[in-house]
Length: 459
Ligand code: ASP
Ligand code: MG
Figure (spheres, rainbow, N blue to C red):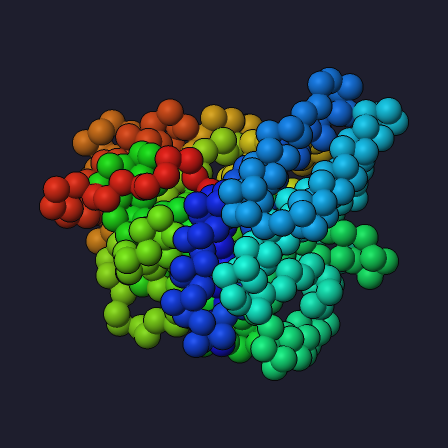
């Protein structure tokens, strides 16, 4: 059995669904289980419509309705499906009207709203696949065992999902059905619809793969796999052939928007390989994520960057020789529910980084009670994923590149995961640094790297 997950741009319209059909048929003997994202930018559109509704501004879902209805028409999928889809759009429209009238939009309602995207896409795709002769059936994630907590917008799957998913998939596939399952969504114990965070259908797919211990999970995207750098930044970015789960997780977190950051976890636990492939270029080998034996790691795998980072310096002479100071500082972060990305400490100071879009007004207010605080926005984290056992070489060469470019490194950290070395620099210098590091560590590809077939990154 294999799990095949198709991202938004891989299912965005009739032509794309035909390509999905071909890819599925080519592997039909491996008993595929399908997981789909919403079509194209549907999720973004629904979120924008919700934001407009709350401001009582003009709300339009016409564009996405057209995308879905045109797809049905182009694929000639029949009246019953069309009516079902129309009904879902009617419900979505009514919800938006409700939001606009009440001026209320809770996390719970937001998740309910965006769930329409995936629910629509599996119905259309399954109907098309059935028309081509496959025994495909659309399924909502909660009907096959996806149970989450009630943390709307960022829900975590509950442990019982493992057993539930594996037993329902077993029953479904034993009866010869090809399941086409909604990614991204689940239900909490009270039956409310939840979502697993943006890009969460990767996690849905790896969860099914791990729970059912399948041969492999294929994540079909619009890029040739995980690239050595962001192709919008580095022309020469090249697909990485193999990475470990840890490296993939670091890459996902620090800017390479290829996979959902938490998507690696279920497969890492169970050792199921993840293959990242490009629907627009299926012959490209893609990237294989799996357990990698020590000693086979190249010096550098990839370079990523994450913008809009805030650097917080916490300095206190009271810290000298004191125990518990760090605990006090971190307790404040925890109380304010802010997660820290990077930390560096000395005897009298702690520096750490946070996402700039977090509310950080409390930092000065609360931390100034016991330390001098300096908060500086406009920073970026540039991360080198590589063999940290050779960190002296990496650091030596990377600092050489910084020096040559006149780029001041404001903080350095070597991840405990033993795969990343990160630098904090000014945001406006990060593109140049990524380019220079890439040029230094990677040999240019003959004739230039293959560009992405589709310009916009898939969410
Ligand atoms: N449709 C959702 C999003 O755009 C989930 C996904 O595509 O994985 O974030
Ligand atoms: Mg998407």
